[in-house]
Image 1: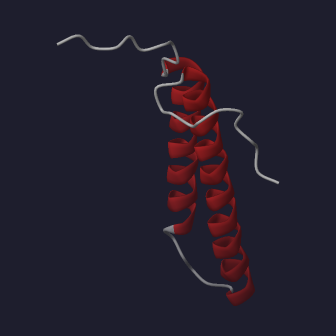
Image 2: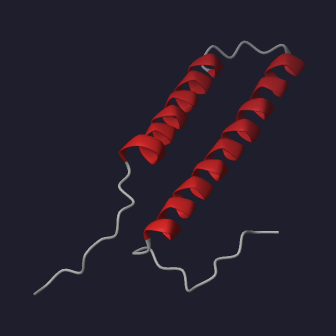
Amino acid sequence: MPPRWPRKPDRKDPAFRKLDDRMTFAVHVALTTAVNSSLWFFHNLKAATWEWLPWLTAGWILVLLVHLIYITAIANYTETPPKST
């Protein structure tokens, strides 16, 4: 069952932004795991010589690490004040 949000979802809400970023990261990890495990399965099943596969896996893991660092250390989840005109 998906998580329930007690109020109307709004990207201006810092708690909602934090939850949304973490859920996006979880989807990113799931996609990476599914695609890479499938590619490695067929690589081993067919005894293929895919020289690009380790590079793809390493690159995707690097992107995941950058994504994780962003949501844990860089992203600012403080309340954004309304802009005055």
